[in-house]
Every structure is written in structure tokens, then in C-alpha cells.
Length: 145
Image (cartoon, rainbow, N blue to C red):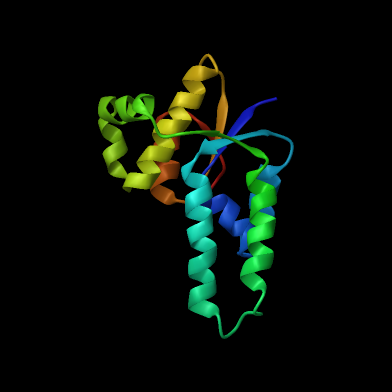
């Protein structure tokens, strides 16, 4: 089974019932899911920010329910911590400066997963345009934006 790297935009699309929810959910199915430990942090912050910005429109227990669902999704992912390997990857690939810092860390982590997997094909799923462009540059299999 092919590895699939996920950034937070895909998981948040599922959790926040966004327009691309069905598409995001289809990526999630039938694959070995991998990501940076950043996925846990970014999705938690994303849920909290959404609740804070909409607390008068959402049910009181919305955040608690969504956090529980998030935990279930996060338990299905294999994580890599940000370490010296990721730092070396970032230093050696100047193209990573094209995107925001956390996205650069995600991309460096995806590159590390590919290296660990003997440079086998790996999917990279994101709804971020810049990260998508870099994924194509580094020849990952990607979703279509």
C-alpha cells in the first residue's frame, strides 16, 4: 500500500465540513497515513480558532465533539518528529523557502518519509497552493487543485 502524506488543510477540510470535505475524505481512505507531528498541533489550533471565531453560532459542545473526532483521525497517522534530519533537509533544499515555515517543515518531512521508504512513490495531499506546487516540483503524487 502506498504511503500518503497529509498536511493539516486536508484534515481540517474533513473536520470543518468545508466545500472539499468529500474529496479530502476520499484521500484519507485506504492508505498508510503519515505526517509531521505538526499535524496534531495545526489541526488542534485550527479547531480552537474556528470555535473562537464562531462561538455564538456553534453549539456549546461543538469543540469537545470535534476534538474527539480529531483524536480518532490523528490516531490513524504515523508521525515523524521535527529533528536534525528535517533541519538538514530544509538547509539543503533552497526551494522550501517558497512556502511558509510550517509548510516547509511539512515538505521536508514528506521528503524524509520518501527517503525512509527507499524513494518509493508517496502521495502528498494538501489544499495549499504553494505547498501543492512544491509537491509537484519534488515529483510527489498529488491531488488536483
